[in-house]
Image (cartoon, rainbow over the protein chains, first blue to last red):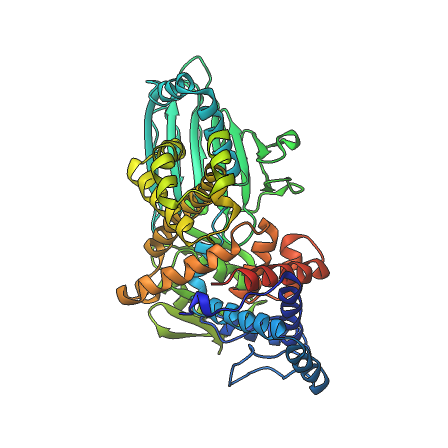
Length: 367
Length: 172
């Protein structure tokens, strides 16, 4: 590790210039040989022309991509030599790259790309409470301890696991692979908080006369239903959070978290993607969107790349598809219980070969 | 406020004085921000450590409460950042297939590195952060990132300069 005190300080201008050099010298993207990026590189080099100036990471001995041209290198060296602050900024730039290169993306992407906590909102509430004094704090405690929270459950499924639960109001909740959902039912609402993954909800019409709405809340917004059957799939990670909602029976209302006025009703047979700010144009629900509830993966003339991406959700480890195979088409109903068998079926029916480096690292290559 | 301002004009209070005068107040302030009394005590301690390493002639020593609040607030924010990092770390490890999971020996170092990176990224705009991580961790091209974030390649490039510059300034 670096000794902090030994690191020379840099000013904002030098840092900015060093950042510009970093990007210029690395050409388009900084594609150094990190774990798991191999296939990414293959895909990129296969699909698009490489930029001439693409280089490995500065200081790397075995650069895989083309070096920047000599004029660029000379200009960069001149910049470094012109001012000790420039050189200091450059040293720090290299340290940034080395540090980023030390973490495996499979872990770093979900950890560093986790959805942001709204710390300002949190501290605002705290500040208000502190200013308002003990009375408000007591009030807060009462609300939290209110007896109307009838029940609460956290449901987590592991990779490949599909679980169906019956809520006490008669709603059936199916939880797909790798999903985290919290269920809270109280006197006024039935709330499902979907952290990540996918659920299928067959909302029972409320037996209480109060007609509590059933709300699925995810990072990008919420889905409101009274009696309806629908699927919600939440995505987050490095991308901005989004959710894919498909209404199968009845209708649901979608409300983006940051644009509640854009709320849209989705009728049966329609699906739409929702981000925090907007709802995409609805499209017809594709067949088999809820087949997983029955443990089946349905494909109907599906591009192999999409099929493999879908299948990968149910398997531990890495499942890759050679870009050359991406456009092959797959049709059929596949039992998710045995994904190894699905791979064997693919090998038998398509010009593909399964290459299994380890149990957890499988790639589909041209036969 | 006025009391120690007048004193300060004559000679700045020693750190011991500041500690004696303000530790109780700082602890109460921190307990209001954190649910756990132990954590409040830890952060109060940490706040005073920062005070010890501040330059002796810093104006901070003349207005200790303002300075203590600033430092302590930063520590509280960092505490919540670290907490959410730990949550994501445990969630991620729990879901990771065994062969991809880091060995127990590697875990501490990896976590420390992630924490260092997380600190650099903290306070970056959400889109800048997302673009930066997509490029650096997922190896996506700027064109791909632009499509995913619904913006132009030029904007992504601007984000990247911004993100790298920030990291260069903050890396420790």
